[in-house]
Length: 610
Image (cartoon, rainbow, N blue to C red; front, side, top):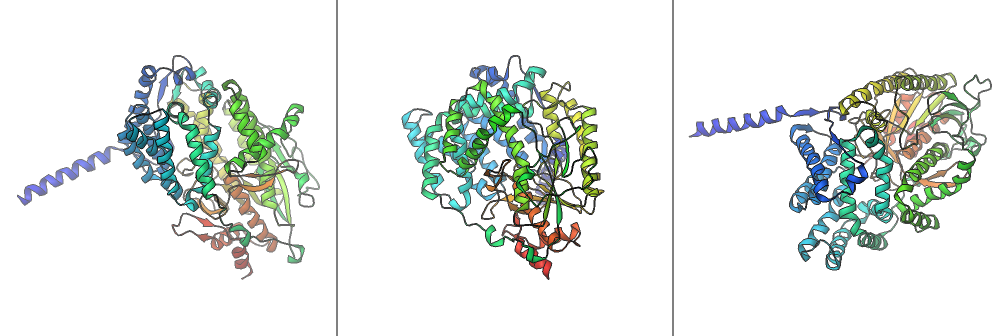
C-alpha cells in the first residue's frame, strides 16, 4: 500500500512538473505572444455596439488572455496584473461577479506596493456587495448601498499609506466622461484601425477597459466622487516632509569648483539661470555656445528651447494654467486653475479630445526640460547648465519609424555624448526613456507591418540600434556620470527592456520616485537597476518664462539626484562617476521592506568629508 501511494504521488508530481515544463518562460516583454483582432468598421463603433456584437469580440480577447495566463510562466507582476485586470473587466461586463472577485484576489496578491495592495478592488467589491444587498445593479437603492459600502471600506484604510492614491483616484473620477473616453479612442486607437483594420493585443485590452469604464464605472461617477471627496476631507493631513532636513545648500564660502551639468531633455529656458550656464567660448556648428539640439527627424537644429510659433506662444499661458490645474487636482487643491480645468473637461466633445491631448502633450514636453533644470540647479551656485535638446514627438500618430530615421537618431545620440565629452560635462540628466513597445505602437498607428509578428520583428530591429548605440555611447564616456529616470509605468524597467533605465553601466545611475514622506510613488517603475529613490511627487520648479508649477514623475526624481551629484562634484571635482554613485547610494536610507533607498544629501556630503 505504501509503495502504491508513493507511485501514485510520484506520477502526480511528474505530471505537474511536465505541465510546468511545457509552459513558456517569459523573461521580457518580447517573449509574450501578440494577437490581432479584425475590425470591420471603426473602433468607436465596436466600443458602442450592442452587447451581442461586442461579446463576440470580447470572447476572443478573453480566450487569448486566458491562454497566456495558462500557457506562459510570467514572473513579472506588472504584466500578470495587466492580464488579470483585463480578465476582470471582461468578467464584470459578462456579469460574472464570482469570477471577478477571484481575479481581484489574484491581482491584490500581485501588488508590490503597500498602497496598491490595500486599495486593490475596493471599489469593485463595494459595487458587487451593493448588488448582493439590493438585488439591483442600478437605481437609487443600489447607488446608496454602493456609496455606503465603498466609504466604509475606504475609510478603514490607513490614510498615511493610501492617501496619495485616493487623491489621484478622486482627480481621475472628476475628469471622467463618456465624451473623454470616446475621444481617447479617436486619438489613440482609430488611427491604427483605419490603416490595419485590426486591433493589436494592447489596443484590444484598452478597448475592453474603456467599455468597462463606460458601462460599469461611469454610471457610478457622482457617488464615487462624493465618497472620495468625503474621505479626502476627513483625512487630508499633509504627510511629513523628509526632504527639507536632508537638503544641502551650497554657498561661495564652501570653496566650490564649477561643475558642468547637461540637461539632455526637451530643451531649457537658460535665461532663468543667470550666472549658472555653461558657455563654450568657441562653439562649432551645429552646436551653439550653451549646447546642441536635434529636431523631430533627428536633423541638427538650433535653439535651447523648443520654438513656439505665434499661435502656440499665444496659447501657452492658458496651457500652463491647465498643467497647474492637473497638479492641483492631484493634490486635491480646489484652485481656480483646477476648477477651470474640470469645467473644460466637462465641456469637451469627443471630436475635440484628440487635439486637446496633442496640445497638452506638446506643452508638457515644452515645459519639461526647464522644470528639470530648475530642480537640478537648486542650491548650487557652482552648477553650469548646458542644454542638450531632444525634440520629442507629441503627435497622436507619431512619425513612421524607418531605417533612415533610426540611423539618424543613432548619429544624434553619438553626437550628444561626444559633445558632453569634449566640453567637460561631469553629469548628464536623462528624464526620458523608451522601449521596443514604443516602436510597435508607432508602426501600428502608421499601418506598417502586415501583422503583429512583423511589427514585433521590425520594432526589435529598430530598438536594437537605439539600445546598442546608447549603451556604447555611455560606455565610451566613463568620465561622465549619467543619471536617468526609472520610468512612470509602475512596472519593471528591465522586463520591459527600457532604455536608459534598464541599462547596466558603472557610470549610469537609475532613480525611482517617492513622495515628500519618502513613500513609493504610485507610478514609479522599478527593477534591479534602480539603486536609489528621490522626491518625484509634486515637485515645484520653474517653467519657461519663470512661472512655478509642481510636476510628478521619475523625471523629477532623477534631477533631484543630479542635484546631489553636482554638489558633491562642486565640493570635490576629483571624484569619479563611480565614487559619486557610491556616495549617493551609501548615504541613502533603506525602507524596512527594502524596496526604497531614499537619497540623503546631508549624509552623502558627510561621507565625502570623511
